[in-house]
Image 1 (cartoon, rainbow, N blue to C red):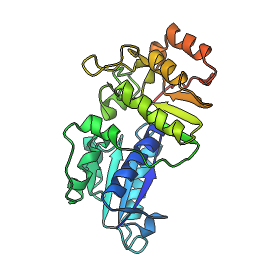
Image 2: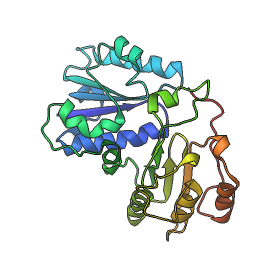
Image 3: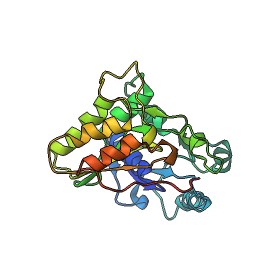
Image 4: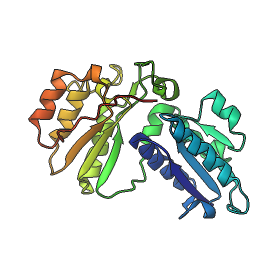
Length: 260
């Protein structure tokens, strides 16, 4: 069985796709060079612009053309569009609508028997990604957003903020550096509000995003650190001082003027 992943939208979706690919290969799927050779097609979707949504609808309709895609058996819709009721209702040609946090349920959804971890949020991040580059890597540090800006759909499709344990993030970065990666992207819908829960926070040094950024910058080796996306209201003086202090942190801040 072969799979093909089509990605719409931001770097977070590319990161999600790397974990999706890893999970599929764990249960026996192989990557297809294009959709026409795939038994399973996964669409990692975006809701930031209507044009992106229209492209998803167009892609699904195209993939269901049997003459063009004779091997196709199932289409999975994931990403920001997947759990919106109006999208589910409209997309009768997709087979599975899937929250990326439920990635460890994939074998169950595809009728493949494999034992499932209990903690779905943590286990999603525990999946080692199938990195698409040998130079640059995406490392998600949190997901969701609590801001509910009037113009933005992200909190509704990604949920409330949840942060990864700092030790897990640093371990992932260390592993990448051991494999000679030179560019590390720390990802989240709002990385500035990174805040690990006290009950799981074993590191007293890391209480917020500037702390995490500083600890990663102190790791040995020659590499760059980038991060996105940032919400202006959470851009603290502490964060600015950490950025200024370490040459490894690129002097570039991605502030979303408008989303969704």
